[in-house]
Image: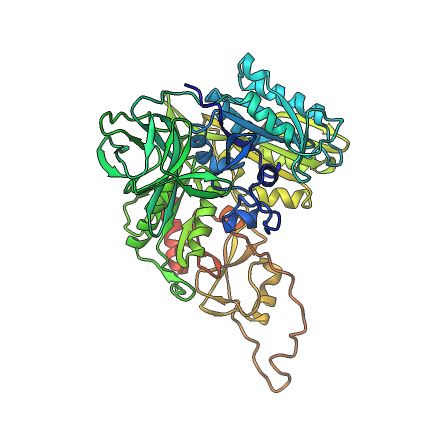
Length: 608
């Protein structure tokens, strides 16, 4: 049976290609908002971090009605680090809107999200967005998209995709790049005409797979998913088939459908509908809700394995508990396990030490968002340097590789290519367009750790860098890590202007006068290779010749202040990042100099 009055689509795109803005206009033009309603921009980015970073992190769904057809729209993340969100969404829909920037064209995440869609045999509609942008080249971009489809092994049917030219900002669409549209009607019509309606058995026993989770203080955990067959009714009894095969009987306490941005309580829904269900206990992603008479589970969602891991550690620094809530190992473990319930691409494992948890994710940004979220909850903890996860495949040690795309001014190509060569990168393609060069590389994931900061310095901030996971390839050998040593605080106290002036010529400072420091805390980068201990708390002595504040008019150079992502990239093997609600502090794993020297001797003896 076909449900011709429903279309289920996912919007996929590279970061910042305008899909969330496009959804805003689709909602507005379908009559979701009242005429006098105040609506914020990027209304689907409801998470604070999404608004700050300008990226979609969590997949979210909405529904619009156009000429009697309900179009369920799922806005997916455009960054490969949140690919776990994309992969499960593909099970809920019959087609995708692939949004591509009319100037930038196909980027690494475009390749990543499109590959996932084609693997599920979804029907694509290509939207060339931002056609009103200066230097837009829509026809060249369409050619790029065709090449990408061929490269990813698309079928002949998938290659016959329709193209809509749009301006998400203006809320217009057209079937011709030369004629600007008046509204989004051509886009709505393309969706209804080309995206297939859901098909399934209406009379068969219920089957629905949970692909998204939400939580409500009154209703508990809420499972969101698409009904594959049958009918679901509010208040009815159902069976939940857990991931381990257990079958539990539950009663549906609330059943919701979607209307615009709101959830609307409904009495029943049938095959093809996307619904939210409460009353399922501790339901998890991938589990199946079915009829008690036929508890047959759908195949579990296949999610790509994590590629990066790092340790989350209970905060044991001298300043623990000053700025946030110090967590015990039990509380830290419980918080990380809770995150794993909703984030299917995250892995958390206990280690030999009860105070250390190994957390694996899809990339540095994926883990950084988790760190930032926990920090905003008021928690204090420490994290180690991110490291890649190796695998043995066919008896050969393999490591994750990234597909890297760089857009840089022509004059900076030399130093960037030199750095990537040292990091074991293979140049795949190089295109020069009007003095701007696009470089495409295949590079080990560990070669990119710490590269972004160097890249922005080398290109004077003009370079744009994007990458996504490619595949596992044979191990490439050693890559030299950070060359410079660090400046380490000698004692606990408050950094003074005089103390910082005395060490300023040793390298680059990370702190300002008045910063509280402790022994073993990293306060700067040495201009040479070795680490050195410095006294930043030193005060100028008062003598009978002059006052202790006489030379305080001498200005210090501006320090280098780290964002969370930059701090994670900077970390060395023997260093931790202390994270609190107010501060990031780089520190040595062993705070006392004698302990560090002992550790270095042990390391050398093991290597020898």
